[in-house]
Each structure stands twice: as structure tokens, then as C-alpha cells.
Image (cartoon, rainbow, N blue to C red; front, side, top):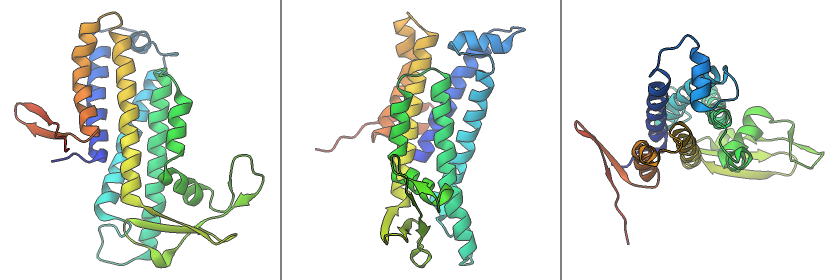
Length: 247
């Protein structure tokens, strides 16, 4: 069966953690942080601690997204509670933002190229815009280059588990987004960014050793195929990728 993008985030994160930990624990040293800095060509020793913290945030926020995709705004409760819906709405919007900040920080710490371009891709997502307009700057949202502020509020009468409508009281403009779809878009971009990081780090660690690069990258390349629609079958003898193309 196809792998959800949120689950794929965990698969890529787990594989990347396994690879990087093998590198830093392959040699005992009194200066562990210095060794990690040298191994991954980091700018400072403390970068390694920040990478670990960012990976934790990425994983924790992913659990929030998985819960939301399973239970929607209503949550795992038998009560139709409006307050619960608001908590879960604000929670999922900020879980998305925390996840974006974590992956962008990892991207930056490993000195991956074109960070501004990746950040702009995240900013263009409708779920990111909804987060800024509803989860952070509801009454003082500003558009770049415009001195005027806007305000946005969710339409509670149209609350659905996976559909969100919000409007601007200043001009009565409304926006409607499919939360499942836009979280899927967000998670796919997280996966894409993480695979770029993995590619950069592997080529840094095995600089000049093309055969070793290709060997280690093969596992991440399989996950990229899954991101692009292939099926991942997990069995006792390892993972199998089934790439089905429809004409």
C-alpha cells in the first residue's frame, strides 16, 4: 500500500538518524562534539546539539500531525466540543510551523545550498499561510511591502474535521482549505527537504568516494521513489519498493 507522507517523514528521519549516529559513534574520542563538527563540516561544535534537538522537534510535531489526520478537529472524543476544535486547530497549525522551522534549521546547520529558496517553498504552502493568519498574527497580519494590517478569523459555523474556512472582516474575503491535502503537501516538502539534506551530508562524509556515496544513497533514493508515488512493502527480509506507473 502507499505510504502516507507523514509516515514517510518518520522513515526518512529514522534512516538519517541511524546514518549520522553510525558516523559519530564510529570512533571514541574525548572531544565528541569536535569530532562531529569535523565529520559533518559543521560551523561550530554546538551545531550537533542543535541538530539533535531539531530532529526531536521534527519527530514530536509529526506525532501531532498523525493524530490530527486520524481524528481531525474533533479529536478522539465522543463530545462535540468547540473548545477542543479550537485547541486542535491552533495546535496543528503551530505543529506544522514548528516542523518547518526544525527542518530548515537542520538544512542550515549542515550548510545545504539555497536555504532561502526552500524557505520560500514552505511559505507558499496554504497551510503555512493559514498558520500565520490564524495561529500567530490573527489581528495584525502584514503583507510584505504593505503598511496596512489585515485580520483573519476561522468560521466556526463551518468547522469540519478536515476543512477550514477563514475570512477577513475588513473586506469579507474568505479562504477555504482542505487540511488533509495541504498537510500532505507540507509533509511531502518536508520529505523533499530532508532528502536534500541526506544527499548533502552523505556526499560530505564520503567526499571523493563515489561508490560509497551511491551505496549509502540507494536507501534514501528508494524513499524518494516512495515520495513520488511508489509503494513500500516492509517485510522480514527488508523493504521492497514497488514502482507502478499508469499510462
